[in-house]
Amino acid sequence: MELAISIIVGFMILGAIYAIHARDILSAVIAGGIVGYSLVICFLLLKAPDLAIVQIVVETITLIIMVAVVLDSSRVEAYGKFDRPAWVTAGTAVLILAILFWFLKEASAPLAPFGENSMRMADAYVNGAVEKTGSINLVTGVVFDFRGYDTLGEATVLVTAVLGVLTILRIKGKR
Amino acid sequence: MTVYWLCFILFLTGLYGVITRRNLIKIAISLSVMEFSCFLFLALIGYKEGGVAPIVDLADPDKTYVDPLPQAMVLTAIVIGLATTAMLMAVIIRIYRKYGTFDIREIKNLRG
Image (cartoon, rainbow over all chains, first blue to last red; front, side):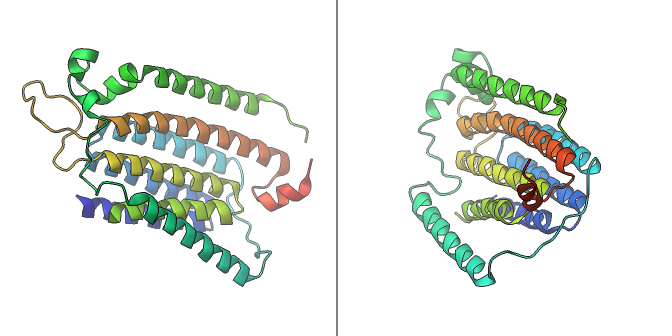
């Protein structure tokens, strides 16, 4: 299982690198779609069918929005030289990478190995959840019952974002 | 543990894109790559070897399930991610209409 997921994540990394370096913005957007759709397969392998369904819908909508924006504007990327000397850039990159990997090593030390989740938090949600919530899908039980207020907050954020999009697209800008 | 490291490398790829690219759409793509790596990490943490999807089988009460809590969190985060991406694209298309370019250096130089 770990091997299969590792291969798919490697594929996602390749897709992301291609998306970042593609000359054509449209192919960059489509290569970004590789990452999202591979994530769907990862969710299925990790036994999360609800996430897979939501992610495939969301990824399709995101891809449609991005393709619409690209087709409505320019597809070429302007390339320019870096402003700073190359050794400064490379040195900064190596330094940041070293710090981040040190942080990863420190932060992942207390983490349980892959596939050996202790379920310390989840026991309260799993045991007797069907009687408490009436839902046989535990994820639905957590989202809409145990953590219902969080879902209310999520809906608020969603409404705010939609209002923001409407406001931004409606104003007439000064040319 | 390898898969956690790969997940972190995916996050770093997105970070690299956000820092080095000048095109606004590529920055948006890199941001969503970072988002996806976080979702994947949470889903990986909740996985339990031999567990089944967290849908209760009433006939067999002794099954082990994968952790439903990270999945519920990721479910919330995915939807919010869509909303923020849509808002980002709206801002980007407004910027393009006003300045006629996606290049953040030129937008910085134009001012107003």
